[in-house]
Image 1 (tube, one colour):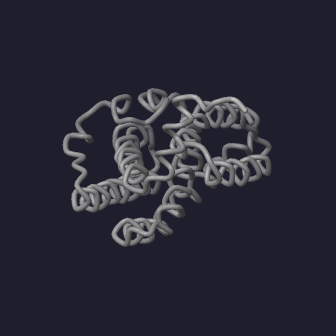
Image 2 (cartoon, helix red, strand yellow):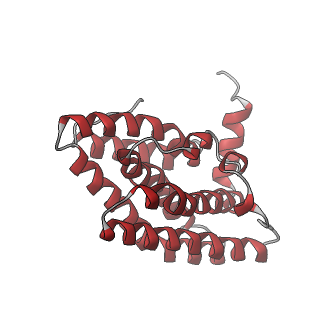
Image 3 (cartoon, one colour):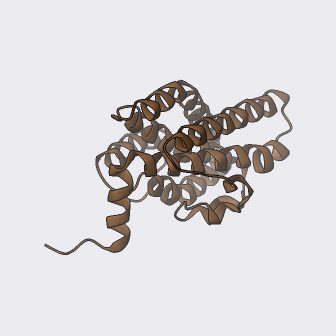
Length: 208
């Protein structure tokens, strides 16, 4: 049996350590808030969608702040994380999130990247560490709304050939960084399977 690579070992350790897992979630939540404010909001003309971006971005930043407070109580200081470029926040492959090339990518971001965060929260909510479990459990309902909205936007995009092609490009672009948030193991496999089914229903696909 081949020895696991260093990256695979780190991913497994990250998943098995709730404190490190929450640290990764916090970095991802702050990144979501950045993308809503700096990338998605400016490209929208519709007032209702602008409001959605404001609300979802604020909720993600609230999740980051709450997670950072929990981590501080456990001896981990995330000070300065929000000031760092996305590529320097410890999120594997996150440089792809520095730019947004289409409106379809906003949909894919919420459906896939935030979908991975939702899977992460559900795992953390089962933690034996009570502060982590409480924080994660409280954030799940909000994150479910974010993911559902993203899937709805993808569904709309798939209604026309041109926008469906953009949606396919977007999900392929976001998919690797979404998977990377979950490391290796059962939560990643469950998320990948469920997401492939949801995308398949829209006529979209991602790599194995």
